[in-house]
Image (tube, rainbow, N blue to C red; front, side, top):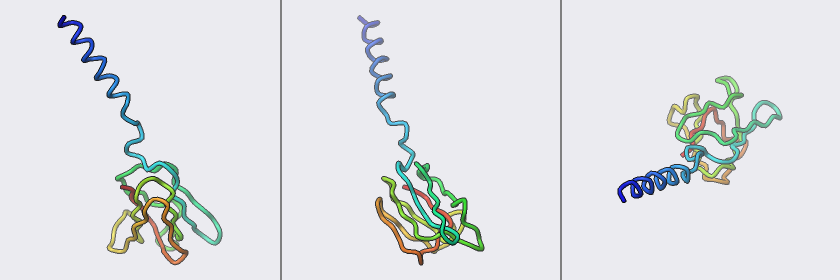
Length: 108
């Protein structure tokens, strides 16, 4: 009887672990932005809770016009490293105009 209960408990625990989604820490979808004169960049399924510096954004030339097509809230920052007190929050599906300059983003 004890062996059967132990096997049942172990099987249930394995089923529970397998039922948890693998991408729980990902912001499923795309985060798009513009940079340069006429280029578009994107982060696809970015990791949540971690600051991401936009690859094409530099100190001299930031990215602009962010569009959050993920399932998570995106907080965009004017500075690299998600630093500084200049930031803007984009809800899922939200977008901003060309005047919003960004260099980094974090998803929650």
